[in-house]
Amino acid sequence: MQGLGNDFIIIDNIHQTFVPDAEQIRRLSDRHFGIGFDQLLLVEKAKGDADFRYRIFNANGEEVEQCGNGARCFVRFVHEQGLTDKKTIQVETLQGVITPTLRADGEISVNMGVPRFEPADIPFHANQRSLTYPLTINGKQTEICIVSMGNPHAVQIVPDIEHAPVAGEGPLIATHPYFPNGVNAGFMQIVDRSHIKLRVFERGAGETLACGTGACAATVCGILLRKLDNDVLVTTSGGTLRIRWQGAGQPVWMTGPAETVFTGEIKL
Image (cartoon, rainbow, N blue to C red):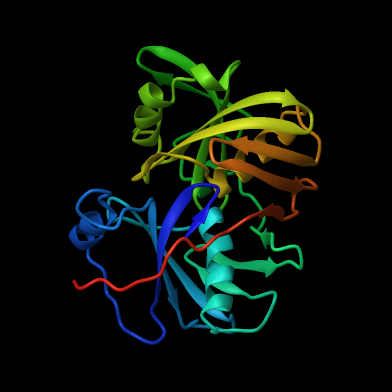
């Protein structure tokens, strides 16, 4: 499946038991010797009162907390596979419950939860909370805004998205020692108060064509910095998402497409 070109394999782990190991995931993610994907998603039975449990593994085999584009694919998958007939479902993740809704127009909206900003919640090494933080990359100081959307993001504003240093700085930010669990590095160009362009270098996956939680994080940062309104179109290399956030204490809403590319079986 894919959401704006951010692609996944999704496995029904309700009717079978698939316990992935990191090497197996790395082999499957290889676009020449395996299937190829940015993330592997598992659909499982909920442990609590939610409808399902949602597990996410990056292409390098690491399990991560959240994936926004994957959440949209998740709700389409469980409908297509006949696992539910609910239009709105509750889904457990490592960082709490999210609520995706399959809309009448075919788009999918997801309540991504309330963003968190305390350095300890990212986690990020800082003495106190601030709107932005200096980060030294290759001897140069860069201003970043940090936010957790269930997974960690560091967002910086760039003048031109086409020439943003994603390939050079992205890996250095993603593995910076100030982020003990790694971080997704976002590069945001502000077009106007209701439109941004975004590229994201995702930890464990590299630059992807789109990043749902990254779009949420960038929009939230832009609103906090008083550079954006509350309803924003986010243009990524793979397409456009709509992100809405009403401010402190409120959840972030993400709306966009999700599509099945093919189904099949693989012998492991």
